[in-house]
Structure formats: structure tokens, C-alpha cells
Amino acid sequence: MRVLLVEDEERLADLVKGGLAGEGFAVDVAHDGRDGLWMATENTYDVIVLDVMLPRLNGYAVCAKLREAGDWTPIMMLTAKDGIYDEAEALDNGADDYLAKPFSYVVLLARLRALVRRGGRERPVSISVGDLVIDPAGLRCRRGEADIQLTPKEFAVLHALARRAGEVVSKQDLLAQAWDFSYDGDPNIVEVYISALRRKIDVPFGRTTLMTVRGAGYRLEAA
Image 1: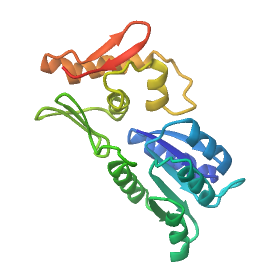
Image 2: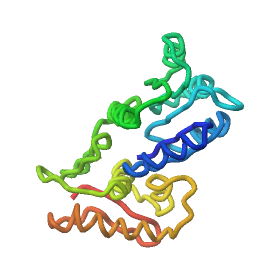
Image 3: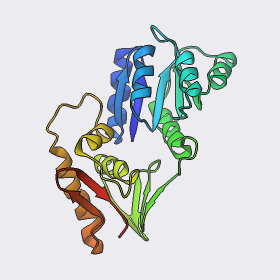
Image 4: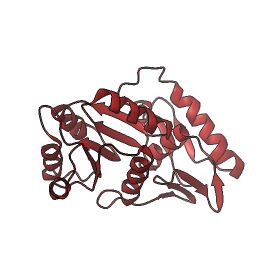
């Protein structure tokens, strides 16, 4: 799952990014409102974590502009301000949830998962590709009645494929969805995770649903 974190406190942003990455989220970071708005409009995210007090454009304005543009990605607003009027302003501008600083990381993570589970408009709670079921909020996967244990990064790659089931997804698209915006490592890492996924979601069940389309990318399809 891909998260946009818009937070001008760099130390806090690094801590939150590190924690979310450990849970399998791919996290892009912006440190001011204008950059955050640009990234939100240029990329697809499962959830946006948006500070209120930002340079150049505050979080309320970023949220309002996204909603005006028809972008209903779930938004969690963070702020050092505390009070019912601040919370009301965040919600009135289109935010889905609100968390005051200082906050518990455990609570942040739980509420982000709840936002992903709730999803944006017309977004399903889980994704089914034949009898393969992917639950983004719970980071769970099963085929039929059999649970499949995946690492966070394996799940992120599978989720990116499942969201476009039946379509060819390029290696670059998978890198963009399952790794963060600044990833500059070996792109062939995708092949390693594709092989690992096949060993878990296909081989034990005698299936061939995760296909390599030579020169183009990968496709996940129903058996």
C-alpha cells in the first residue's frame, strides 16, 4: 500500500516513514503543502497523512483542493493544534480522520488501517482474483480457505498487481507502487519478489495465475 506523508517536521517524518515502511507501506514524503499537493495529483495513493501547519500551503487548503478536484483518497490530518474547532475545520474541508500531536504510533497505524479498510469512494474492502483474496487493511491473503503468509513487501507487490488484475503491469509501475518515490536501487528486485510470490500463491495450489509478459511486465489473472 502506498502512503503520501506531508509533514514539515523532518525528524517526525523520518520516524513515521520508517515505522510505516516496516509495516509494508511504501511511503513518499513531502515537506510543504505545494509539493504535497503536486505529489497527490501526480501519483496514486491508498491514503494521505497530512499535517495542518505546513509551509507554502496549509493542510486544510491541500485537503480542500484535492476534494474539489474529485480526489477522494482517504486523508488523515495531523496537527499540534488541539480543539474541537480545529477538528471540525479538518473534517469540513474533506478529511476522513484527525489526530492531534503528540500521538501514539500504534494509534496512528490502527487508524490508517481503518482508513484503508474503509477506502475511498467505490473502493472495495478486499480484492478477489478468482479464489485469491487480498485484504489490504488486514495485510492478509488467502486462496480459497487457505491462508497465505506473505512478507510486507510481497504483499505490497501482490496488492499492486491485484488492483489491476487482468492487465499487464510494468516493472516501473510495481516499483512506484510497492517501493517509495525515491527508490534508486536495482529494479530487478521486482523479479525476486515475483518469484517469491509464485512460490506462495501458485505453486502449492497447482496454479499459474502470476504471469510474466516478456518485455512488458507482469499480469495477475484468475485461474
